[in-house]
Image 1 (cartoon, rainbow, N blue to C red):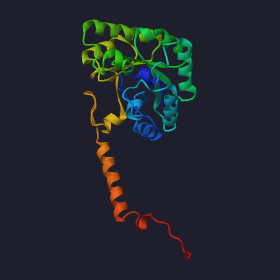
Image 2 (image 1 turned 45 degrees about the horizontal axis):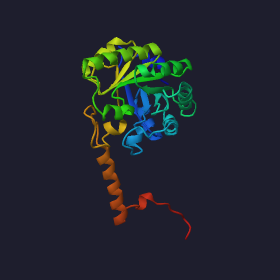
Image 3 (image 1 turned 30 degrees about the vertical axis):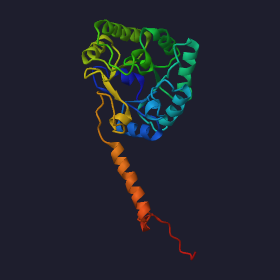
Length: 267
């Protein structure tokens, strides 16, 4: 089983791979394929539950899906998102919710979006012996403030603030930081500014690792962000299989003799 120390020690040595999963089968597939970190992201709201944003996702949703994913893991580290309003509103509630993800969802660590405003929350959760990953840049829970899912850190002032946020997160005890939707040179600068791993999603080549949403990289979604590479076209492959099943049922070729039970008695 990959541990937090294994992840930290990969910095500057070996690229870290992270992939989302939301159920047992996808978790098992990611684990067996050798993914370092399986992320149960609140992105499940959009790619699994059909919501427009991640804002509707609840702590109970995260626990339910985390528990399912965990059953499929033997080696991968399990990281789980803390959803919108489950942290920062009240420190005690933040600690409690993080604890629920660990005790009921079997998370090995939790991920929190935001910079300086989250520092106290990160510190307190880490003090409770729960590993915390930070998340800077395009933070989906801030979609309304940002005016949509847009690249962040284009202005010098914003870039400087993000570097400061990363340093503050490390000092608060975060064990890694996800960098999303930022210029490549900023991803490089942040990576060089902290001693903990950075994991990019649309942050260029120079981060310590990469993360993608599984349904995006597997080709389920036609419209994907610029930074997504589709490694296959699962939607068409699976769609063709379902259509073949429909055709064979309709024309009577399934089931044939290969897929039936036989008995010796006369019935």
